[in-house]
Image (cartoon, rainbow, N blue to C red; front, side):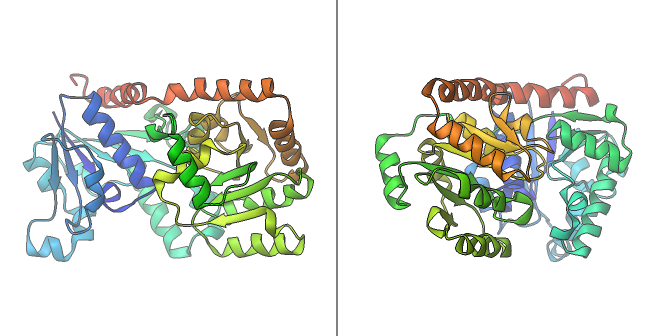
Length: 380
């Protein structure tokens, strides 16, 4: 069985959609040995991140072949793949990052799946340029209508697709994303010490991981610090946007700048040690498609706090705590309780989180993905 994938993000994106795409491909390589995987990408020169995938003769890297295809590689990706899919004997094509070729329905004998990660550009339009919103809306809506089956990464995202694009819920399956296995594995004492020294980590700290943008709502954590015990600081890890300046201005105005540090450019291999040494993980985002950092936290054995209003309960499970995204007092209260409270309650959160995280193991998620594929091709 030959399965094709839109692998642009797997090849070019180091985070987010790229991580998801590589996760799916690696999962299938490990747990679905009967498949040949064809990865369609617009540029061989920009495909360095594919080196992160295991070496396998079941992986086939497919690029534009003619001069005109290479010259207009973006166009080739969205309207020029059909001939290649049929020449390669593709039975099923999976758009891993919210889109499908616009004319994919003309590819005879090719069933189609698209993964929709979120519709945040519709819920928070102020965070996107107008032209980007138009393009995303066109591509996502068209993909949802053209696909034989849709994968949503959470129940929340599934409901968003139903409500905003009037798609039948029967056409949408929820298949969660897992996180990198390194978060559940022990971290050596040497690596813990290396990371502690590299970032001058305090004895007690709240960890935040995620881009520092308005939707992620880091300001709530900054505001809560006024009521958090003075022995507790914040390490906020993520890509800066202009919103980071707002957070830092607020901290200065409240004379809290010494208690929150915004850190960018942290290499991925340092993250497990940053999680492991945190007293609590806080993810105050107003809305997510799923919320991978919460899953990373509970996999690492860290008590976690998220916010209500979207899907974070799906990522953090019943053992984590959730507060209103505008309630700084509730957030401060929960931080103090978890960090300064009794060890038994804290350990219960840790144990519950780790148990919940086990449902996101690769084998379980691969079975869920295979169930989607079998709806379209029962003989798989």
